[in-house]
Image (cartoon, rainbow, N blue to C red; front, side, top):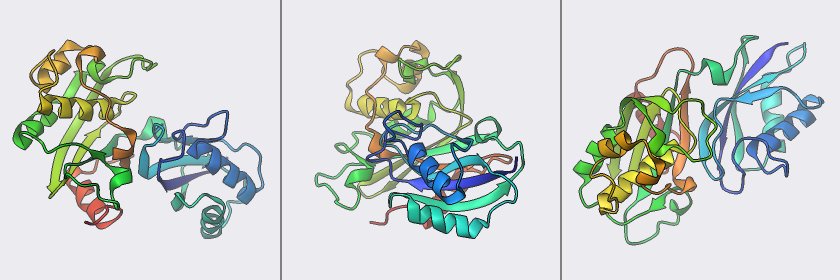
Length: 268
């Protein structure tokens, strides 16, 4: 059957993550229901590139959907879905994909951004999309610790205890930290991620900066322990967003950051 490629953006607040839930509270549940109405089908096959956790946002989630011939008018379908979906879910684009397109197996890199807010006051325009922390003790050391996750490692120290992953080895291709007054954006690009891996990395970065970890003095030390109980806390979900996914050629992280700055990034 023909397959369509959807790019979807959503605010994670109020949803139980992407993956369908029995109570119908996931983003996938709303998307499936809208598809059934717009396409007049029942239970269409669909799969997304990433299972974002409850409360996590997406600026670019990629979903493959099987449709019957003839392929529907894509612009009409996009407009219909956007009218049917909740206002915090939006269909960015729809395109015809190869019949074997699979967002999970064919993705080669993903980029996530985590946002930290370090001011003493709460910015109402950002409050729902950041983790409010106190000012960093040493931004340079924070960046050094962030850079330590680059490469291929066993990320057991940053994997949720209930993860079903067969291996804890993952590859981080690049990282970046962008500081704009009181806002800190932490960017991480990798071929794939473990459950809550980025939130655990960011939580550990913050705890290291605060001197709260007794198990290790830096990120390299925490990595080497391969023990989730020796790392820092799990950063709150609202600060995290899935920003970009590559399927053939890997986009340089600096280019992803530049493009995001022109698109969905909240301006101060």
